[in-house]
Amino acid sequence: MRIFAQNEPLTETELDRLEEFLKSCKGGKAMSVEELDGFVAALIAGPEIVMPSEYLPEVFGGEMSDTCEFASLDKANEILALLMRHWNDIAHRLGKDEVYVPLLLEDEKGVARGNDWARGFMRGVDLRHDGWGALLADEDYAGCMIPVLMLFHEDDEDPALRPAPIGPERREKIIEYMAAELLAAYRYFRRHGQSYASARASAR
Image (tube, rainbow, N blue to C red; front, side, top):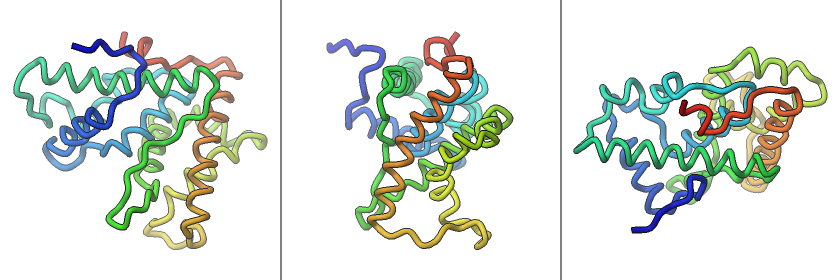
């Protein structure tokens, strides 16, 4: 049996296993792997530690024991271990001052749109809305949020909130900037003395 490091990236097989499990949760409210990736990125980069008791119901669309069915306790622990390893991978890269490339799924046309990632990220922001508000109020850093907000509002019901149509080349640039600005947001909150949201700390 291979022993994985706590911050080793998930393999394609493990990501598929996590995605399949999330799809099996009742009610259809569990996150996709892409949305989960954006959500976790926001929690790690953000202003303070968010405890699992608060963020896991967001991931699973309710209390895990109510919305998800497990063949055994070992299966439940396996899924949580995958989630924690993914968290640690993102935290490790940002902690090393490296750009974390968002995990994006391709649509039926083979295009990685990034909208689900942006929605997940904004759900993470909403859990600590006041803290993120400090970044948005800072003229030097408010621009960090522009790429993610463009993809978040791309299909908004309110036409006034939608950005100009996003073509393939522009989308690629927005996604590149979104990754870079995630690191900028992480640096902002660390520079201002906020808590380092490592998985190890948040699991206590």
